Each structure stands twice: as structure tokens, then as C-alpha cells.
Length: 318
Length: 318
Image (tube, rainbow over all chains, first blue to last red; front, side, top):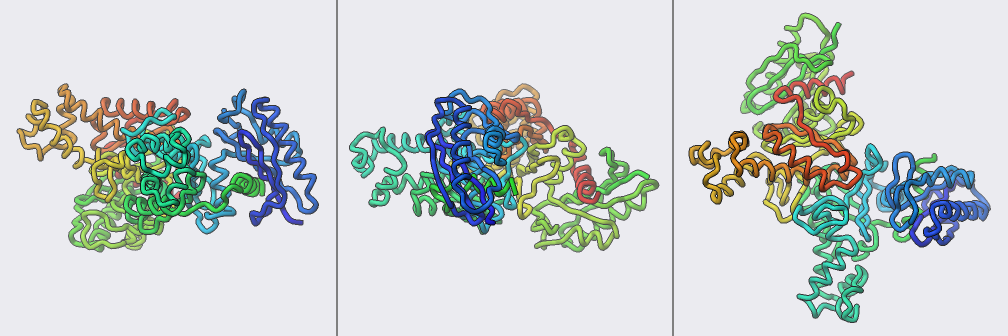
């Protein structure tokens, strides 16, 4: 009988879940509203509901367990702490509670770690025992895979690559520090910076694409303009790739790791972005690293949440 | 019978060695010129000579093995690669060769790792299972101790904290990157920067202490002036501490480590430097880290080389 797991991607609006096999195929998939505003107990109910529904729909195969990818911090005991946009949460032991309600062994980790574990088992990281996972989205998430395993650090907080300061005099970051790479390339920061630069570049396609309303700038708009050959937009991605590359060179030097896998919404900017990251890492990492350094795209795309949570379950429960 | 090891500190000019017990006491100590210019084989001879002399002088106790701290890179197979100021070296398997000549089990690691292992076993790191070791000297060396063990990385090159770029537009570093913390606080960079700044601060005591010859500025001169209350010199150490603190905040965030231990020549600058490092880390690391972050002085001082190599031998050979 095929060994299967359930992967749960806990989002602020929807909970997405699927039955995943050991080859990284999603056999059944479903979703349910999170209704986070109804509080933690309700969210536990919703997760348990979708997990049980998937388990019941299964005709063949044996469910080994459930993996959950959760926003916010997750402590080594499985406590999910203050996930953003989940009102009323302090610390919730999500795995334990879902396990009690479903009778299925359950494990939990944070979004960023789950993305890294997913790429390691099913995606671009399959061939690389050691890599740095970068998720370019609202924030810059990270995960460090060493010898095929996620490096969590002594208290589960490791891998915060978004908060590597690449310029001590740089823009202020939400975390309180200055010049964090997230404060350059995080979605809102990037859009705000582009809006400001557009004052000097009013002829950019971006202005046209947002009908002059610069508050509507988002990374996909910048990508659209770049695809249409807009020089300014292309240079935005070159610059963003440079910033991420500067951070990666430092992180590669620290961990002695030569591979970075980059996913997330912003990463869809594609070749220009990846060329800039690769070029910067080759110029800036220490020689023995730089000679072999590569920055490659993640492969799991919008299945990353479910597949990553599934990979976590395979990793922890088998 | 007491269990003992021999710790060897391979320097460019002298080889220092000592018999070390498990409490971190040096029972006998000796040194011999390196004579690196005579080539690798001669250096192996010199190390073997001093190791055998120490072993023979020992009245009681059993030698478990020899640990060597070597400059340059050391690969996971124990190959010592291109140590600076050792002409004619490519890769030398120092431990293997010394072991063959002495009949005593021998292990080798690089200077920076050995310093970290030494502080972990015998020094300021005894109480901390996880810490970042920083050695402020000609370069900025580093070592990451996780769960009491050194983190070497997949190919033995990890812990290069000196080459974390704290400003992508910063001064060019010898490694080819820009704004590495070493390019701000490494001995020569720091002295050159101070010499330049003195043009605007000609009344600083530093000028008097070097009799107007700014090429003679060294960290201990800056410390001397600071101790005498020289405002400019005090501000140099504040600024240096700030740079190291910026780097440490990023590295602490990445590894989820809350303790840094700082040693090396420049660290002798003392309270002003440590206050600045602590203050910066508290302001700049992520909240859960910053709340408990401390930067403390190393304890082994000029015994760090021998004791660290001794600790390496205890670690690897018992």
C-alpha cells in the first residue's frame, strides 16, 4: 500500500491541503476558509475538518501523518507564535491540537522552513544536500538545508536571511534594523522604492500599466513592464538581484554553501533577476565558494505550500 | 594517570607548543622557529621535533594525541592549503605527516576554528553551548559553535564572519568583495582609515604617540590614546564596535545564536569596544535574539593558540 501524507498550507485567508505521495505528487487537493478572525480554536477545527475529509476520501494508501506549514514563528516544541493576521493568537500548539482532533500524527514548522524542506525533497534541491532557500515575497524568507536537513538553530529561529543587513546606513526595516535585504527587496519596500524612482523616470511603462496611480505598483507590474522591454523596469530587477546577491555572498561564506534556490512571487521576475543574483554572487563570495556558486529557481511554484508540508511530514514521521 | 594532549600553535615565525591537561592548564611549554622559508618538509620536521621533545620531557601522564592550529584553509581531509607567508605550500596533510614522524595521533584545524574550540572547552564559552567566536586581528576570523561543536560546513570553509558585507558600497576588501567587516576593522584597514581621519583631527594624541608618522599607527596605539582620554581615539573604537555589532546582528539572526565571544589583538581595546558591540547588537538583531544577546571577551588571551589546539585534540581524539 502506498505511503502517503497530508500536507497543510495554513494561510491567512485559506487553508489548502492535499494528499501527497513520496514522489511529490498531490493525489487529492482541497481548501477551506481559514476564518482566522474566529480565533485559534476555530482554526484548529478548520484544519482538522479538511484533514479528516481528505483522509476519508482516500481509497488506497496509508496516511503516515499530517504536516502543517504555518506563518509566524514556530518554537522547537511546536508552538506557533503570533502568526501575522491571526487575531487572538499567542502561542498555539497546533500539531498537538490537530493530532488530538484527527487521530493522525501531526507535525508543524514555519512557512520558510517548509518551503526549504519541500524543495529539498521534491524540487530544485533534490540534487543538492546543502543549499540556501530564499523566498522573495512580502518578506524575504529563508531556510538553510545542511546535509539534506533543515538547520533550525538552538531555539528554532535560524535562517533569517531577510534580516541580513547589506548596508548599515540603508533604509529602516520593520524589524528595527537598517539596510536588511528585506528592506530593499521585500514587496512593499520594493514597490515604494520604485514609485519614488519613477518620479525621475516618468516615461516608464510601469506608469502606464498602473494608469498613473503609483500606489498600485506591485512586483508583477514591474515584471510585465520588464517583459515589454521597459529599461527602467529591467534595471529594477537587476538592482533587486544585486541586493539579494550581496546577501547571498555573505550567507554562502558563513555556511560554506554554494547553492541558493530562490522562489516566491518576486522570483517570477525571471532571467534578469537570476542573472543579476548569479553575477553578484560570483563577484562577491570568497573564491572557493564563488567558483562553484549557483543561484537557481525553485521548482514547486504554487504547490510549494502543500508539497513542503507533505515533505515535512515524510521527514519527521518516517 | 592524567590524560594529556599536546597543543601546537603554528605561526609564521614561531611554532609554540605545550602539554595541556583536561582542565586547560599548560603543564610544559616550548617554542621553536618555524623557518617557513625552508619549505613544508622542514616545517613538518620542526613541529615533530617540538612535539617529541615535549612528550619526552613529560614525567607523568599519558599523551592522547597532538592538536595543531594552522593558518590558511584546512579541508575536511586535513589538507592545509596555502597558509599565508609559508612559501612553497600548496596542500600539505600536516596531521598525517606529523603523526608519521612522531608516532602520536595528530589532528589539525585552522586558527579560527581552533580559537573557537579553545574558548568552548576552556574559556568564555564553557557555559554556552552555542556561540559565535570572533577574532579581531589582521583579519577578522570566526568560528561558529553549535551544541558545543564547531560548525565546519560541507567542505570545511564555514564561519567566515570577516567576509560578511555590512555595506555593499563600502571599501574594497582583499577578498574582492566590498564592505566586508574585515575591510573596516581588520588591522591594516582600521589603521589606514584612522590615518586618513587624522588629517581632520590633527590634535589627537595618536599623532603625538607615533611622532607624527601616521604609517606607524597600530591598534594598540589607538588604545593607548583612548586610555588617555583622547576623544578621537575613543570614537574610533565606538565606530569599530558598531561595525562588528552590525555584522554580529546579521550572523546571530542567521544562526539563531545569542552569544558572541570576541578575542584577538584589537579586542584589547576593551570596554568602549564591547559597549559599542553590545549596544549595536541589542538595537539591530531580531527581537527574540536581541533580548538575550551578549557580546563578551574571550578568556584565553595569548594562550589561545596552544589551549585551542589542545582542546581540538581532546575533542577529536577522545
